[in-house]
Length: 136
Image 1 (spheres, one colour):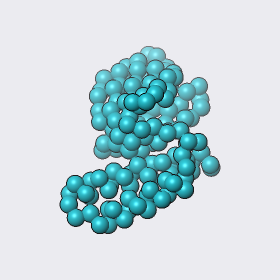
Image 2 (cartoon, rainbow, N blue to C red):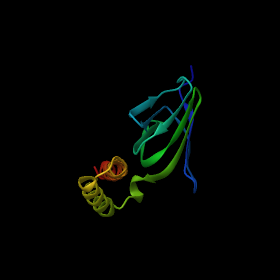
Image 3 (tube, rainbow, N blue to C red):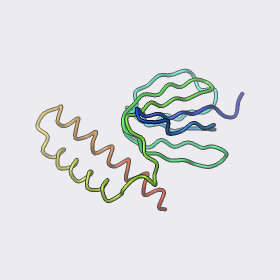
Image 4 (tube, one colour):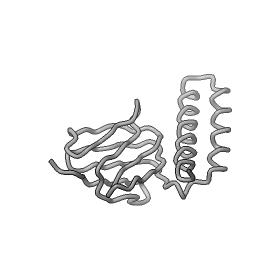
């Protein structure tokens, strides 16, 4: 069995990553999905969270918001609405976004408002988490 696979992470604006990976963790809608070489084929919706992958022993981390992933035994393609590298994230701005999103969540009166606010909280938390891991 192969020891790595091709990884592509794409947004509507650009190709963010084209690399060879030994493993990848992607935020599924209902929890994280770990992928190793030879994984069974899968197409899944993604939520907000952290994408991390290992290439040549080095760990790479990104914050992402909503998308889809196609997993094949020798290739993983992530199509995401937004993807940010840790060094592209303004932690102060992300913290302000989290505060606003939490306020929206507290004020939510409909299921739709609650869903939108929850997604915003998750995105802000993912951005802050990825940025802080880089600082550590």
